[in-house]
View 1 (cartoon, one colour):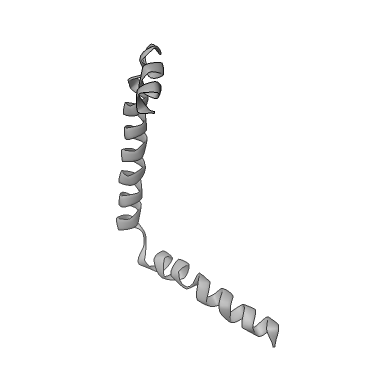
View 2 (cartoon, rainbow, N blue to C red):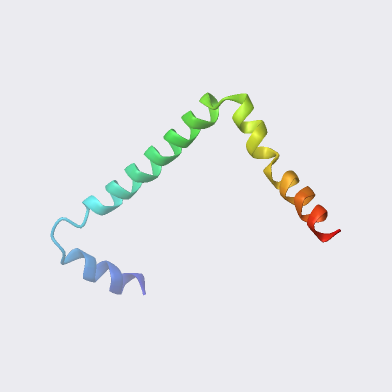
Length: 64
């Protein structure tokens, strides 16, 4: 099956740039995500991590 795909892709001019672009997008996304995680404020992380607990508490209050 791979030989059929490879055969078709070999006929496209400039197809070798697509894997490079995909790798760059992947790498840049995770570098930015890594940077954001280490530079995020502790208060923001705590607030966001408590959202599921607050929603659960509010939902229990509504059911009473």
